[in-house]
Length: 186
Image (cartoon, rainbow, N blue to C red; front, side, top):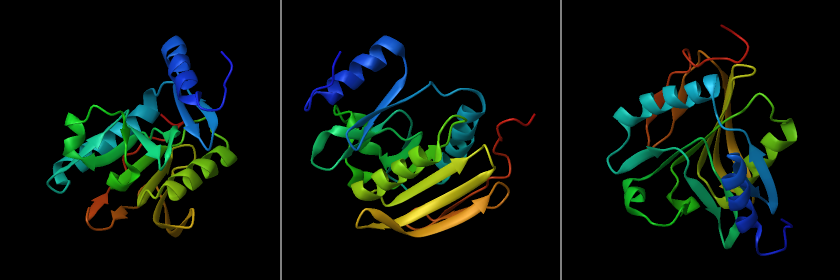
């Protein structure tokens, strides 16, 4: 199937259906990822288990929920975990408004390249997602990006596994990273 302007979303949906790969459209480019498994999924599960009991009323933690790029139905990203208003449970649309996202979490896979990671961060900032947490089990590192402006995050806090991630208000939650699994370790 050839991609023509205006039908990237159709192409992405067809690839997902045919292959089972996760497909996103970032800046007009199709980006495919294998299905999460093992330690990648374990990081997401551990973060979700920490977040759910302490989330402010009205917020929920969702997986497999995509975020639309403003004013472009053919540009979207699917974070590993996203915090959205609980009304998302009742929404028929599959693309969340980036203004509704309290936090997007991206867990870096073993095969992701540095330019792909930077491109996703730039996408989230340009879309106006207020907080992005990037978790890197390859190196045991995390980064919390905040205050998007002009397509870039103005604030960044770096840490390593074992150091807490302080999520600012309205979340006001501290995530413990000590038990997050690292790739290549037992």
